[in-house]
Amino acid sequence: MRRAIAFAWVLVLPQIAAADEQILTFDGEVPDDGLDHAFVEFEVPVGTVEIEVRHDDLSEANILDWGLEDPQGFRGWGGGNEEPAVVAAAAASRSYLTGAIEPGTWRVIIGKALVVESPATYHLEVVLRDVQTLAPQPERTPYVAAPALAGERRWYAGDLHVHSRESGDARPPLEEIAAFARSRGLDFVELSDHNVLSQLDFIAAAQADHPDLLLMPGMEFTTYGGHANAIGATTWVDHKIGQPEVTIAGAFAAIQDQGALVSINHPALALGNACLGCAWEHEIDPLQIDAVDLELAVHEP
Image: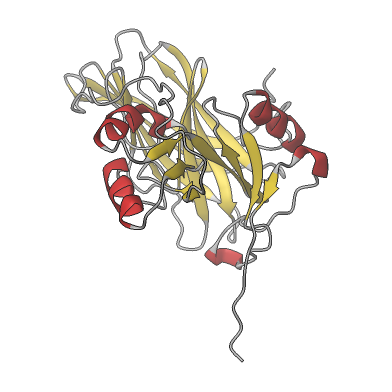
């Protein structure tokens, strides 16, 4: 059941920008309702094969994050990605998922990462196309767990917190991550991109090229009140705390129910606006936590 949310917005009726696209324009204010996320709905007609969402928070002080839902639910979370989000059946921009463009009601997700100036405003342009402009991505394949790369008993070195280009704050593709990890003598890395699992689409190709490094699935469950690592997660878990039936306890249970582990990331990393939401603030039963980051400080004598 969806919660009704009031908006102040102006919709410019679709205008034909070219023979193969329509542009829906939304200008409005993000509601000051105490919730971390808001939504702007738009209708997708039959025959649409690609959607592009261009976004702007219209402010030098405010920071808004962006995501997308299709009629079935989650389609991607660009977070602070500055570039537009594009989705189609055979391709998608980083942080978003491929798949059929279903007609019906879609939603742009707006995350209130930092609101200094009120009201926070936004400008959205949703482009609906009947031809795909993105190049197909045949390298995307469904995730399949890799077999064990080694079986002997020994210490294995790895990194359980690695961001790929599927996160808005990172750029390296999996090939670059794998090459760097092996250059440092690592045996495994966990790909923990922010609130997405789109990186899993690229694991098979990268794993085949790097049989001496295990690429592990995962996701950094990123909220504005703390980050947690879902080590081994292959099913997306909703991070929009405060929305109907979305709680920290429920999210942690959903992570663990799929056999993944929950680790609280950098719980004491309080850097203000330099790292929004990095310090852990949520209340949670310690029995629901599998691990916690160890943060070591080096002090000069």
